[in-house]
Length: 275
Image 1 (spheres, rainbow, N blue to C red):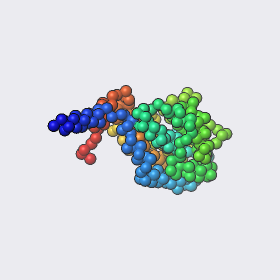
Image 2: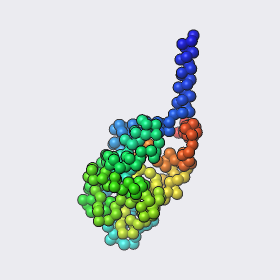
Image 3: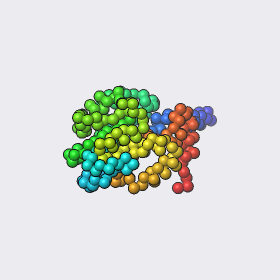
């Protein structure tokens, strides 16, 4: 009877470990594998950028086309521009996520090193889209919450993979540059002064609206998406990101100082079995 009792002990230990001590980052394994291996993810991203590419001629030609309706200028002669996020919209950071999982660490551990390695590859279809937009005379603004200290590594990353960026005007607008914080609204306002923004593209709700609208409960965030229903798929394009983002922060009321056990409890409580 001793052997079965020992096995039972280890089974109970394993259950308790998985239920309470499972690493926050280790739980990202399935979503990271989805991004890295799923044909469905690749198809979804390609579909998004192909849709935007097909809309370019109409968006450029129509002087009333504007992805920032609240900031639209009466001057219809403004040059067309695109505002696009960088991380997991242009550049694939899933290898960084994989490192965190395997090392048992959490963001921001190793993030600066990853940015300065300049090894992140472009997402499927994004390079073709950006090159086509540039060819058609559209100004591309990369509005990112990467810190300004990573500008050199980011520009080298762009150059390595042929991602177009102009040198005559600041096209890479980074966090803590010119006093900018994580809220991208002021950067959008700056761009809209001299350009007609035809598309916004990102992987987080805050890439499209003021951060105060993104930093709300999951239910309120869904209401924001519904409020701007007419923008999606024509002026605004969301890249799915199951690994991280404000969608997760909303679950924890943006308090990331919670224990693993508390995080698991919150996740389980939020699961809806009635849908």
